[in-house]
Structures are given as C-alpha cells and as structure tokens.
Length: 255
Image (cartoon, rainbow, N blue to C red; front, side):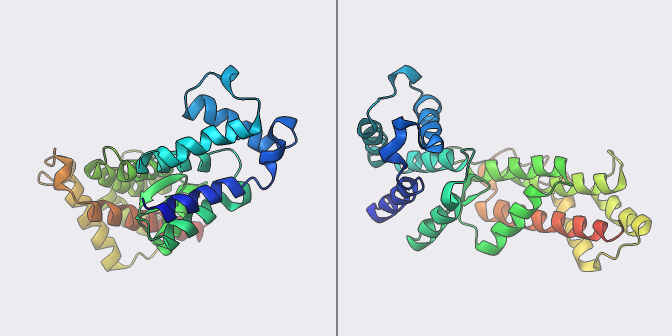
C-alpha cells in the first residue's frame, strides 16, 4: 500500500463524517460517536471507559493507528467501518473510487474487501447476495466471498464449493425439493416451470457441477487449497452469482 492510497482512504474515512469530529463529544453527531465507540471497543479491543474525552486525542489515536498499521490492517479497518450500521455519505462507493484510482488490487463488495473484481462483476455478486428470494443461496455466496477474500488464509477450493452450492440451493428453492441435485434439477425446472434455459448454458453448469462433484473434482480430491488458483475461484463466484440471478429472473416470470 503506497502513501497515495493510504492517504486517499484516510480522507474518505475522515470526510465521511463531515464536521462531526468537532462535535463528537457534544453528542451532536450520533453516528460518529457510535462509530468511535465501536472502533474503540470492537476493533481496537479497548475498554470503553478509556475512550478519550477530548476529540483531538480520539482522532489522533485513530489516525496514529491508521498510518502505522500494516497494509492488511488498514484494509481490516476499512472493512470494519464499511460494515458500520450506516453507509455515511456513500462510504463504500467513495472507497472503491479511491481504490480504483490508486490501482489497488481490492474492491469493497458487500462490506468485504475482495481481490479485484470489476464493476459489472460486483453488480452480479451484490444482486445475488441482496436478493430476498434466495436466503440459503445468499449464505453460500457470502461464504464464497469471504473465503476468496481472506487476506491471511484464502481458501479458493472451498470458495468454489460454496459458489456452486448457491446455484444448487436456488434450484432446490425453485423446485421446493431439498434433495434435488443441480444436474437433474435444471431439466426439472424447465419441465415444471415451462422455462427455457439455453442448452449451452445448462450444459455448462452441469459440467461445472460435475467438476465440483466427481471423484477428481473440487469436493473430493483437492485437499490442498493451493492447487486451486484465485482466478478459478473468482470466476466461479461471479459466474454462479450471475446464474443465480438468471434463475431467479426466469422463475419470477412464472409468478
């Protein structure tokens, strides 16, 4: 992380609360006060009674940490703030603008700093995770995103498993059959819901499902996650998110 990127992310964080720093302990900016308290006790792991009463000392301590932290600790900090209850002044969007401008290898996706994914791919993943119709699939996709994005111990093999499990979960939801396997489920969905899924697309996901299920595939044989490259896991997350959106859209046409 170079100086320009670190400065840019700090400026987004600092300016996201406008002039609240001057009023922090006058209780006139409840969002900033609550954020400072959460940082203090949940991120820095300090006792709440040691939170400085003087705003300049609080700001100074946070800034000292930010500018002396390792690069991955800065990203942990940004993730923490991004998951704060309020997306103050489009914090996520402005962070992503800064990350893109400074050519960072990460983007914020659903509160997780993820190895670089472009705008169209982000939209597919976020749409699938935010869909109210696919609760179980959302869990799988969030797990896939987390495993892909873990900066200390990424697990690409299990990220792929979670991604394809999300598609299977949607197929089961559409069929109301908790035991349906994806390969057979797609044909059954077409028959029972009178949906047309492009043959090449259907065959492609059947093949992917076979790749993750057979004796030589992800689910059984690859015990060493280093055997699976990041590019494969990223592709699966985006492709499976897009297919989840596709199936949900198709199913909604029959409502």
